[in-house]
Length: 220
Ligand code: SF4
Image 1: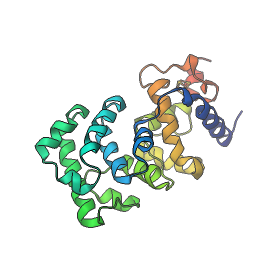
Image 2 (image 1 turned 60 degrees about the horizontal axis):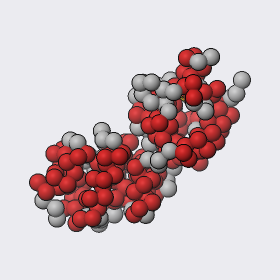
Image 3 (image 1 turned 30 degrees about the vertical axis):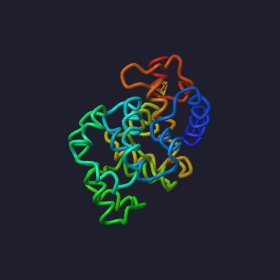
C-alpha cells in the first residue's frame, strides 16, 4: 500500500510522461507564443472561463493583435470588443470584465498585474482560480489553481475528499509539496481534457489507474 506521498510522486511522474502526447493547455500556448506576459495571461484566463481552449486560443490571438496592454485594451470600445471576443461566449459580461480589470490595473497598479493573491482578488472580475493561475504561471509563485479538472481528479484519485474547489485547494496545500503546486494544474487539466473526462473517464486505459481510488473501484 502506497503512502499519499508516494502516490503523489508516482502520479506526477506518470502524468509528466503521459501528457506529452496531448496538446498543452491554453495558457501554456499563450506563454509559448507571447512569453510570460502577466497581463496577457490574465486576459486569456478570463476569456477561457466557460469556454473551450480550442476556441479561446483563436479569440486571444485576434485580441492580442489589437491590444497587449491595459491602455490598448481600454482603447477598444466595448461594442467592438464584444465582436472580437464573441466566440468565447458570455461576450457581453466578459467585455465588461476585461474593461474593468484593465481600468483597475492601469489606474491602481501602473499597468502591472499585481503579484499577490490579496491584490488580485480585489480586482473585480478576478476569482481565486484565475488569481492562482496568474501567480503560478506568470510569476512562478507557488499557488494551486483548482479548476474543475483539478477538483474532480484530485477527488477521484482519493487524495482529497472535498465538495468545493476552495476546500480542495486547502486540502491539497497540506499534502502536495510546494514544488508541485503550479504543475499540478497543468498535468490535471491535460488529463481531464483527454482521459479523466467528467462523464466517461477512460479508466481502463488510464496510466494512473493503479493509484486511483475511483479507477480501482470501477475496474479492479
Ligand atoms: S483511473 Fe479513471 S478516474 Fe482515475 S484518474 Fe484515471 S481516468 Fe480518472
